[in-house]
Length: 332
Picture 1 (cartoon, rainbow, N blue to C red):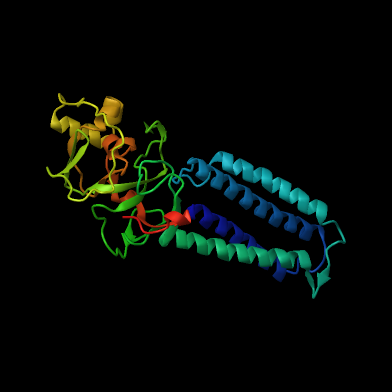
Picture 2: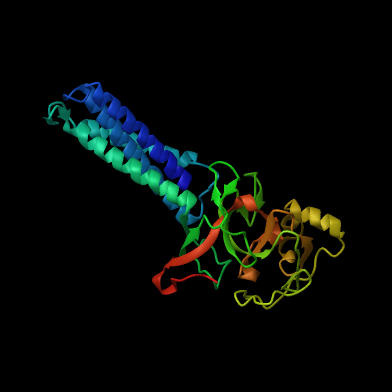
């Protein structure tokens, strides 16, 4: 969302720059066809922005947002239709001779420039804050119950693991490293939109899970019990198992080296389906990557199925639940 806001801010900034340029050239001193056309351009921009953001918000509520894509063709289509409607309305309403001129400036242009400057500043500031510092996130599924429930809204701390350089995987000023037990928000680790995991294409979507395996750890699940480096974690009070039955092992005849390769190449779910839920591994977490699982262990499509999460895909750490108010607080 932050990148979308950034480019919307740039778009409004271009309009603001051109408006000041035309003002200095004296193009806005009278009520002419040019001023009416430029006013229609501003109305089209506002309508485009509102329609695109409304479409993105609707997709977000349905869990259809792809964060690796700036805007979908459908979202742009809605924006273009709204832009034509906005421009048409502005031309119809702002008829010749209807807009007053005061102090040598067309008042419609004055209002447009003020609004353009306000939107430009607000949107650009919001995009910077969301990209570098804090971002809102909505829980899309029940994989993190009881820690988070479907529909919970929370803030994600995006600077704790370092500030990301835009459009790169590089970070600087790391306040601390990812730790075992951290609840992280990350972009699903897939580079192919055609790859299906968890019942569909997860390419570019944001996930939230808990880190259970650090780089170099050996992780295994036996009959539903998590083992890290051969031992059960000391405190997993957050984990829950709702299914009383257990799937039997399904990959006993696969050589450990082959199993590791299958897991790293994200093939286990395709080969063994749900059978790896309760009997998984052992696998060794590759360098620079993390094995993550949902707290709702029997209802979570996580690293058991589609592999580890590269550090470059991590966006931030779950920080504070702000809605609903009855569940507000810091997650553990």
